[in-house]
Length: 316
Image (cartoon, rainbow, N blue to C red):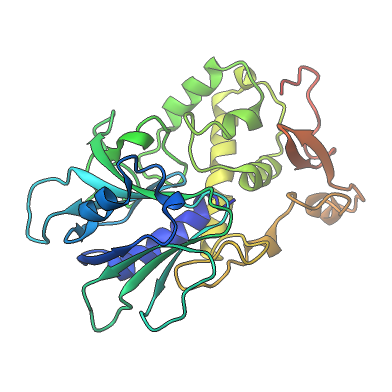
């Protein structure tokens, strides 16, 4: 499943190609991908045709495009087109003469611009993602809804208002996160995966951040001191920033950016998916420790038994 760096790569691509452009046409070959738009295909199309995409914003894995009736409207937008990639969703910027993808679900056409393709295509093999138009509501803290924070409006889609800020958000509050983390009685990785607590961290980057911070996934959150919280958030920020620089993490052809290119961060993973391979940190110290895999929340968790010893009071 695409995680925060992958979604941010897509956001930046969309910002470049479609921000400020007017939607002139909407085609929905497969209505299943707009099932979250409860009023159906015609209402979905009616909300989009003639609307101008003002910006492309992200919080965690939520991606949205505030809409205005025209580029000259000065009032704050009231609605947004929300895109959720699910497990295999792709947003591709294409020229109209490019062949349609096998799993094309939704196609938006934009007013021509000399330097940009005219179509945005939503392609989804497994149909867990989708698009919908929804209302924007004020952010609880009065700060910009997400990234980019510069010039951002203090608005967020109603369906995303409950999720926490992510470590790459300039308005992320370490103090607030630490207080909320300490109030939980759960394991650290489970807390990192709780999108209401901190958004955008999925299974891959949780394992990588925990390895970098030398913390076990089952460490009780109520034992976290402020320096510990700072260390795990710094690790998450660092690993996701490096993944963003590499274009995200791709294990197959399902995740691509808006131009269809895959990311390369999978080549830099230290723990995730490396069961039985040497721990890079231990190997550098002359040890032969192997990465272990534990079952966790019906998935897998990867860690080093030496660098990340299991606490006696482990809490899953």
